[in-house]
Image (cartoon, rainbow, N blue to C red; front, side, top):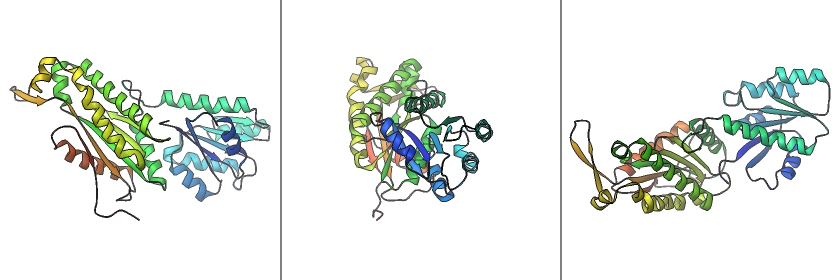
Length: 315
């Protein structure tokens, strides 16, 4: 399952994490992580930029109001939906929570069905309201940025694939943008299907824009996914050209100087970087490194999978 919903549970007990583990046992689209309400733990939990936050108001070391105010001070989490669960049924408490920009207050004892569908429906609303590509349905730059931050804050080994088409503009100029859109969708389908089949739970696929895509993956599967994407793309790209152009192996398109120029049949570049050779601190670093590797890959003729390798691995 790719593009899971990340839900942070702020709770100084295991009550809510135990409940969500039970309720979402068969729903693999969610990842629930618990942190305590003390400031260091809360800060660490928020660094991963959750999609939804659940705060159990009972038995907190820090009072629930200060916890919610702290969450809202975070730039990345100031609009993340918050659910507060509480034993008290005091209407004044509910009003105080709303003043802290909490979206939902659910009183205990929790109705399991109501709790389950509240989480699920809020998550669906988030997905539909976020900036996603109308063409591919994939998450855009906001979600890509957040996912990179999550990986940076994690202790796991990860890889980022930057994917770009070669000679796409020339194809668009000759065949038109509608056919160009079909190529984009074709590429998107290959990437998603490959990650779905060969990847791990929590792998992420995003659409940067145009013919640029990104995959944020567990390191273990990244190389084989990158190579498979190249192979699958090359095997089917011919369907988007005329037989004549495929036989020639190129198309002729007017360049900026008004002269006909030859452009080869579209190929694909997949550039991979990972944190086994370098520890990244910001998503900007990752983007710059990825752009550098991709530039080297695009200088190579034909479709290519290129990994950034350094002399020594980090211990």
